[in-house]
Length: 147
Length: 155
Image (cartoon, rainbow over all chains, first blue to last red; front, side, top):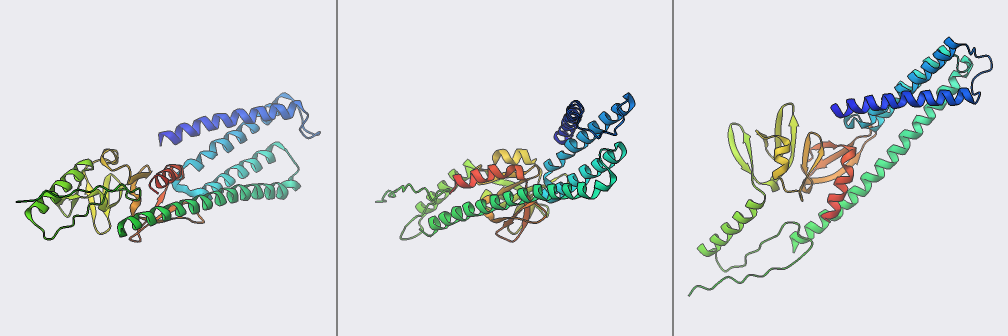
């Protein structure tokens, strides 16, 4: 439990930092809507939103380390957490027009489906290899017993 | 005049555990002594594990143990037929178990992988283990590498 808690703290802080860095890069490269107000309170709000989103996404990834959860539940949990926080933060801060929401949601769904599929295929193949090795081990043991 | 036993040692990689076959005309006291001596030597390398079942304390051969796991605060030893409880911790048991046969698969479980029938991966994304007697458990993904290495070593 201590391991997961420490992991959560480290990842949340790392995520917050990454969120901050990404926002700074976007700001410096003009990667924000033209109509966005750039006074100090607005900038602070935008930065806070990025930090929160980064912290939630990265911190939430500790769920993949909870073995009993399984890959599917972990992916679903992380999807709900990240998508939910992104949609809420982006709506409050006006990161994109409301009409874009379905498209953004679809992108998140597709991205997480791909993540899950890659994981699923990887583990299915790992288990297949393991069963093949186990079968070989059992065959050589049985051969030894018969002799 | 009593003859000394002929001893023949055959090196064969397919035997993880040595198999001792005694060919004899009849089961004499000499043969019984040989059997006892061999049993004493083999059991001393990997001790029998003490377990409690229905108030009786029994010694369990490591070969018969299927899995050892924690259930709440208890440590449970499972053979194919019987469930025992142990007064020792999982860590303490792990120290005396044969590392060629037993492997920790999660924080709360050690298995005898010679009793494993197969592994599976279900849609929920957990890796399951099916034992020879039909029982199931799950294995931590982080332990898969170690399991693979161990099975390959024993192949």
